[in-house]
Length: 166
Image (tube, rainbow, N blue to C red; front, side, top):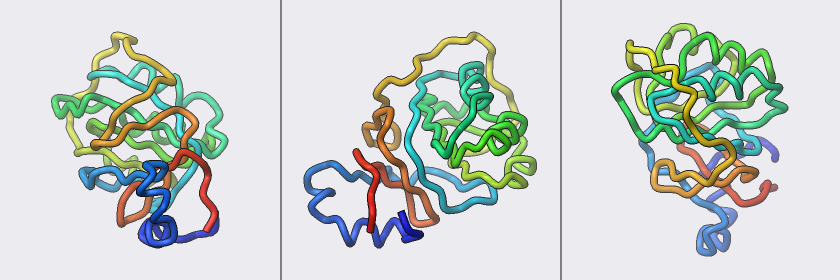
């Protein structure tokens, strides 16, 4: 998709909004990382206060994908830190959206990748290796499925059932 804003995508696609094929996430995320605009096919993950599966995903080649993590909205610890974000950047991930917290914000903000999270937190996550990969998740009031497309900019985050062209 050519570089257009999420607002322009919404304006150009009212029929997709009405049908539910294009959805906007509630505006609850903070912006981290140097890349404020990013998009790509979604990979979903569901965890709670555990970052082992997140790290495993980000060790894979990203190929322009966006990892969307339902961390249960927990603000008791960070489930994403600087080292995994550096690895994601180096492995070609377009972005990461975390319904949870991050830490090592200075390191994350130095990376050329888009990161959205609820907040920052100094405590690290547990290492239980518990979670579900490639499952439907609900983040910021929006149901998201593996393989959908995510579009993010400073106005917000959109999810579409298919890749959009404007």
